[in-house]
Length: 182
Image 1 (cartoon, rainbow, N blue to C red):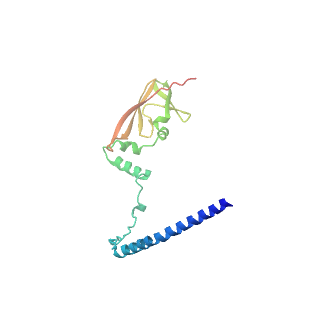
Image 2: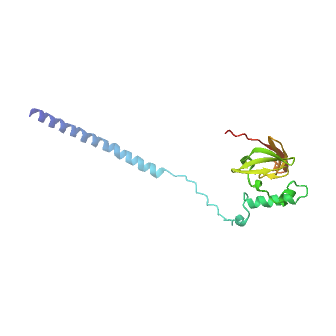
Image 3: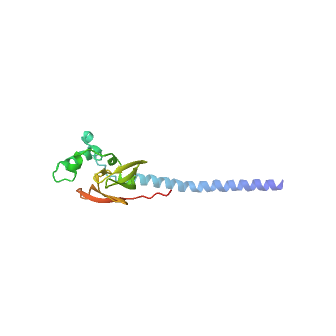
């Protein structure tokens, strides 16, 4: 019983010290509140006014019906204009009938053999698992390629392509005989 009494006296003393401490702080707290109020009254905020928003003038979109810059229609028009020039390499190429091998890119073709008929050399080209027989003067590829020479091991041809400046130039190339393993 003596231990309980000591504990309750200790708790009572602690409560007394806390309440006395709070009474001592209340004066400091009042001073703090007065100082904050004084600072609020004396403070003069300096905020610069916002500038008025700029007026937005909407513009009508006029290019909606124009030709798209990357469309095939625009490219076709440009090629036809180029072909109308008398000195153009494309003039003769545009006006002739296209041959079947002009629908395929050169890199999809492979030379698989050659034959000679009536003293004239022919090459055998494989495209999409189909075999085509071509001779000198035939056209192939998508760049107006024309076969200039056929030998037992390769096909030489010229193409008409645009250089970096946009001028049409002739470029020569060849397809080599592809030997397949059986």
